[in-house]
Length: 372
Image (cartoon, rainbow, N blue to C red; front, top):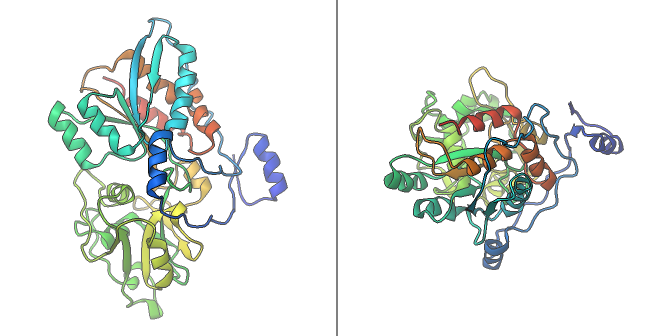
């Protein structure tokens, strides 16, 4: 059950009873870039955890309960690579799983970094890699060159809503004085790319998006993140690539080397549009609703819509593993993944109060990837 705005005292009571309540909190201050000392500490210990949202989503009741295997005794030792934002939840999964299978030993030792994941799989030093982003093309190319097939990437939980550094959802935003309040993926593709795989002609003026009067002939100033970057790659894959063919950015966009300058730049320019993780979006710009498919709904980037997996630029965390097509995984490793995708596994996600548990349909899709 999802509730609209409500008296805060009543909201807390409802939250305690197990209902999800969308928050109306103001966005927190924009974060500052991490220092070299921060990065060094995170590689050995994982990132410093942020303050959780006051209210949390609930577990989807349609998620299947975990049923341990009785037909085989599982054992073995496995070592995984892990992004620096994931060791906390990974250790929760491992501890819970080993209560069922004490002879299965799993560890995710430091150093922690998303950049180590695919490389470690190629070298064979790790049995799996927990990565807080989609694999980049070079990750996949290096793996495929060695093994003859790509790594298997299984979505295992949602990203966060707006936690800095913890895979926050992506928002598209305009200057606060801009009257536009929604935009489609097809329109974004026509604004951002040269390839325009979604079929529209180039869009360069606000009038082409339906604005009238003084806005009609004004140019669209686009602020984007310079490749390669995790935010940039995510938007490229979700918006510029409706199929398998890679989308390419327009070269005349205002590219920034990091995500931090985008929101301030859009705030200063009435004719600007940009994208960034919601954690990086300031109060002085306006987030707008997005439509993924023609004829579909325009969905705002609210906490509620991200938690329900309705918002089309919500993000996912992946477990990457070497699985040859047509062949099964090691049974203990496969069972570990099935546990993560169960109600009990997603409860570990909720207990940490940072990331968003998968919905039942998402978990079903992920389980189907494990079939030989």
